[in-house]
Length: 297
Image (cartoon, rainbow, N blue to C red; front, side, top):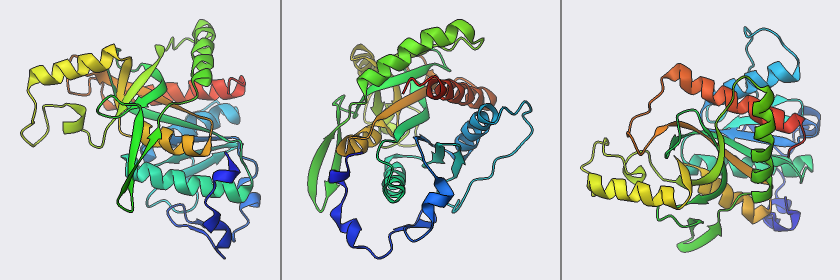
């Protein structure tokens, strides 16, 4: 994190309230959190609990599945877990909620005086021409116009931010995955590519099964998704442009991982059941933890 790019206004606050986390700058944050090296973001509270459970099993060498990890501090908006030097947090659905979480998490790291933490985003997503359960390492996030930028309107002024991720890190993770699959019985389908980020689940993702009458035909939908695939897109999510745009402003080392729930070139529906969805997130979190312990990052 580039400390020179931190908002100078924060230094004038007597107390900085990280309202949605239930924290503030007057708390003994160092004693609570210690030294954090990685922050894993995910969408739902369930996903955060699954990721925390799997990482805790490996971190503490727990051989049974029947245990529960309790989130810490305020839980009405986000669920936060700490395991060793890893924080895991749910940021809710969509870019607005994710940006709130990113702002307050970077504030927390500022008060912990941690500038080198790696941000990792693990999300379920729609897939393009990849089987359900695939792990897509995102090297660049695109908006719905297939442009690599995140747009934010601030005080009526439109700003654009770049949406690339750390391509060297993405390539290193991909190379490690070959070694990983050689000894891991899961044999995950891990690929590197781009993702489209949208503001909703239906119209902006070119789905035909929303409630509103779509402004596009099936032929236009098919053409759009094919264009995206030809541009190197393997997944569609609701977060990555905001996540990349935010992190790039602060020079935070960040990577996004999408776990596909179906193939949008075949069907608009999610093709795997709830148990399979959770298993896919679980598998991706174990892979990322192995990346961390093998010092891939």
